[in-house]
Image (cartoon, rainbow, N blue to C red):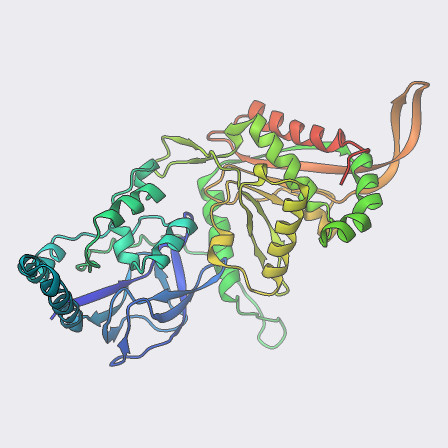
Length: 438
């Protein structure tokens, strides 16, 4: 009687655990392959977890609100009826083939006996990262999560690529099931925080919600992992501000999209990343290799109505024109505020921006969004008198000024790279073409 373990899936490169929201099935219920069995949540988004097989749930190992590490077994499924289903399918194939080519019947019959033998040799890699593209292909081909994670990856650090999946599908004859794997123990911190004295009924004690707890853990992890250094510059964005104010209404009438400052910021950052690709990187898990990302995926920190933050991602920002960037930014911002972001829309960022000026802040020192190596903060745009150089000499004029601050991981980004990149972003914003066509 095969018992299949359901494990907490990996839902992103920097996600190490998830919280169980609710079980859609109970012990004794029958579950179909790919049917939703539970809902889980990370610090970024809520997701549904499908069943890896058809069977009967025999045990639920965790309860709602439990925080579970990725790869941990969370339920057990009796998949004994899989063999019966496969036998019926095999018998149907034998009947069809025997009417056409009698010699192929013996081959179809023997395939079922080979299934159990080959399944016992199957070892799944629960840490295999699945990109949104791979997940999309898997859904179209009716592949289980475990089956996809069994495919040997030829990408960096064993990452599964599109070509790997297609090569596997050419020779795919049956779905695979997995055998239980040993789960590594999660190390616990030995730090004991000092006690905090408060008065019951006088001080207001508020329980952290799930997202706030996970954000706190992620921020502590980032500060513990990356030695943060922050650099600042002040820039004159008068030309950009005047152009945007003059064109925001015509832009919306022409493209049916709001023109905020964010797509202009994303555009400038993407250009600067092309000039300084070393800023678009990550550090390998062993801390000995620098992984420079080819894709330029810009995360944009977005405030939620609850007060928490989420980071949706503008994928391949360097390939989009201003119209495309505006449409993507507006979509992600609206989906964030309405809790309608898809898992793939908050994964894969390679660099993040945080517009702290939205809250009236002059500047900020943001914490790096792991596993990235830098994050840019954009302060409030304020008008003030400045000394400028003209053909007539130095003059005092009213200009729109703002501060940019770049926090970077000093393990791999030194002052030259960090400062040069920050200056280049500032140059693109300051040198904005006031005669640009929409």
